[in-house]
Length: 62
Image (cartoon, one colour):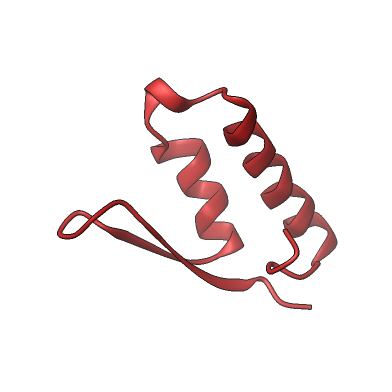
């Protein structure tokens, strides 16, 4: 089981790289654009991160 993964948000030069589930959860809760908060996809991503952090499951599956 692994909580490591890699995702790039945005376009250069403002791109942000996320390396693990904890960073993804923080980004979703604190830095996600206001205009897109509360959407079904945003909420699903938050739930997936929380579940993964609690269970220690595989980040690739989440």
